[in-house]
Amino acid sequence: MLLKTKINHTLFFILSIFGVLKLNAQGSSGQNFISTPYSNYGIGEWTNTNFYQAGASQHTYSGFYSYSFLNPATLGDVRYTAFDASASLRTGYSQLGTEKYEFLGGGMEYLSLALPVWKKVSQKLISYDSIKDVKRWKLTPWGATTAISIKPITSVGYSYYQDQNDTLKTRTSHKGSGGVNALTWNTGFRLGNNFRVGYGLGYVFGVTKDNALFSVVDSLELGVVEDARTIYVRGMQQQLGLIYTFKLDSTYHKFGASYEWFSNTHATRNRLTRSMEVTSAGYTSILDTILNEEGDKRSISLPSSFGLGYYFQYRKSWALSFDWRTQLWTNYSAFFDNNSYQNRADWGVTFHLNPEDIKRNNQKRMSVPVRLSFRQSNSQLQFPTNEDVWGVKEQRIGLGFGIPIVRRYYDNSVITNLIHVQAEYWTRTPTGGGLPKEQFITIGVGFQLGDIWFAQRKYD
Image (cartoon, rainbow, N blue to C red; front, side, top):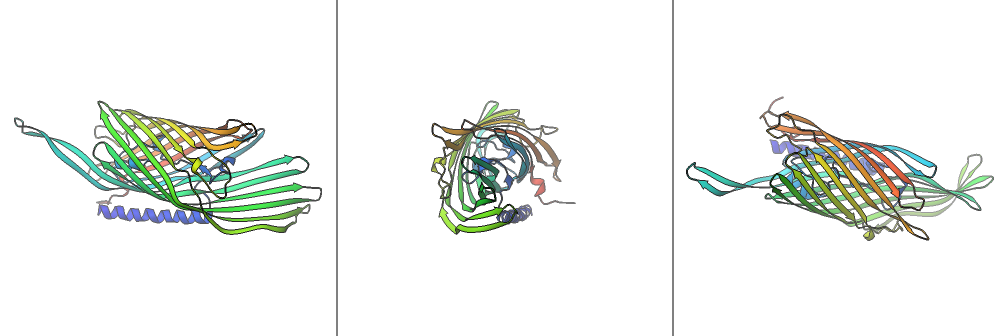
């Protein structure tokens, strides 16, 4: 009955995902909205979405209910059914000189369901006390957990203009929306006490829209050239992950690594460019259709990435994790994007207080997990000038905590659920070149629900 219930909930989750896919296909916007002119490059702002409870630990954070999107091997530690969902509210601004553009947005962060599919404990007799008639066994855990998830991997949102005051006064306005998402199926394997391996397969889909207006003002009318472009992205994502873990005295250690790549990725472009005029009376007329392109489908290559992480934990009290990841943007190519990029690098460190995601039997109440994280990034964006090439640096500081909701079930087992609250302050600073500076504050709430939502009840 328990297996049947989990299957039913899995089917319901899959149907919910297809509903999200349909809404995304119709609305053509990413689930998590941002407003920044820097998202007008490539296929949008890369989100690096991960669970709130992980902080900046992308390769090593794991637990009985917890894992990471970026390293499927972390699923090997998951022992119970876990459902995770999150949404956020984001506010901030972009500023260039005296011009300041404020923003309020946010949206869905992630939706994921993990299910243990295999558990086994092998035992080996290592000693026997004939006087006390006591046998000593070595227990070795084996298992596998699979997870199906949906998350945004890029988000597009910008609205800005550029004025040119030379011989003629001109203005170029840009407006964009959309995003690219991933529906993934990851599986992690627990191979004894020390090794975890994982593999993930995902479907990449999304739509980005861009509309540019070039206008020239004279005394009688406004001349406008409109360039509207829609890009449909489809492809496959794959991930490999590895974790090595061991215990030394009162400390626990983890080393993690992951590799992500994309294959069979293509984009279809629809583009309409036309010239118009707007008279002083407000009348708009179309003068000429310069370009009308539909269904231009070509292959593209998205940036692969790999990363490493180290996790140190002292007893059950606190933990410190270090993380590094790079995206190979020099291997990125798309027929609709002529910009050049550099490889992106992200470094992160997270301090976890009370890192355990379960209530231990010797605890009267589960301790509140608290995390403080910092991440420094060198963006893939680069802007060449006559004298130099300018880049963009990003910094993120996050503070979060979990609210335990612990209940005893009918068989006296303890089921753990957590509500995670996360606040993050994010700044983006160009290295020069008169580029806009940005800062954002994000408040997110994540729900981490355990087995009690999926087990078959024995009574009402």
